[in-house]
Image (cartoon, rainbow, N blue to C red; front, side, top):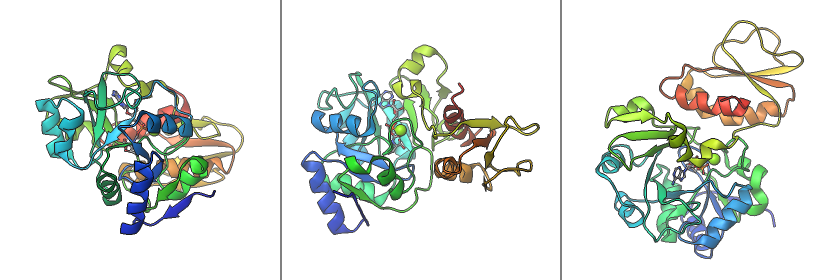
Amino acid sequence: MSTRIVPPTAANIRAAAEVIRRGGLVAFPTETVYGLGADALSADAAAKIYAAKGRPQDNPLIVHISCIADAERYAHVTPLADALMRHFWPGPLTVVLPARDIVPSATRAGLSTVALRLPMSAPALELIRASGRPLAGPSANRSGRPSPTTAQTVVDDIGDAVDVVIDGGDTFVGVESTVVDVSGDRAIVLRHGGITLEMLRSVVPADECASDEQKRRSPGTRHRHYAPSVPVVLWSGGELPVQGAWTYVGMSGPPEGASREIRFDDEADYARGLFSALRELESHGGTIVAELPSGEGIGRALLDRLRRAAGVE
Ligand code: TXA
Ligand code: MG
């Protein structure tokens, strides 16, 4: 059966919700990347997600909800989490909190915590409401590959495993949500993403995840990610770090000689287009030379994804 890509009409959302209620998989657009949705309250559905993505079993899933009040149904909400949810939801922020028992262990990979997110995209919210379930939703790519920012990329990666893909067009943030541990009284960023550290700090005390112990709290950060099928090397001006054929992605002009180049106006634009750029450039072969961003604002998320695409810590 070929995967259906459908527009987010009311009838298509209703049909997709039925797929979710029957325990199936539906890929859906969010403001960050496409998600691979399944009933977050079903251990069987979670198992299907791990199989479809080839995802390591120790990497927990984000639970997507459609209203702030639902957070209390699935987690013990702290005052810190409440402040962040009210400020940034709907939007690209995921909060990690002590879980309630209703969330199956399979969804949270055996952890005592659960990650909650209220996305900004209308089709995502409509799908959650129509299915009457919270949606477990990792990025809808094969594990380790760049995340999908278009419906077609989902089909290219995991088309066989998903029943239907709701097409919401290109996603507009482009990197995934920021994951923060909010179980204490300071927010700890476990994964940089669409909500920057500066934005978090304008609302609550927030730190970058520093220690190895803290890193262990976000299992996803342990695995290699975002890797195209060709080598990626990072470049910050000056001498080129490659020999042989190469392509370029970045903001400023590269030195002469790229066989293909993709250039962005600023870091937000670079973040929005990075994953599809990596996929396009890998099809040209050679090495991908990627310009390093500043490491501030959205540049932090960009830097993290680029480092992991290049396989450097
Ligand atoms: O923007 C996003 O967050 C997208 C869209 C689809 O919502 N989803 C996404 O999911 O990026 P995924 O599975 O690709 O990444 C989830 C990240 C992983 O790094 C995982 O380890 C972390 O969130 N995570 C999930 N549950 C956690 C928990 N209980 N404690 C710590 N980290 C958790
Ligand atoms: Mg992912």
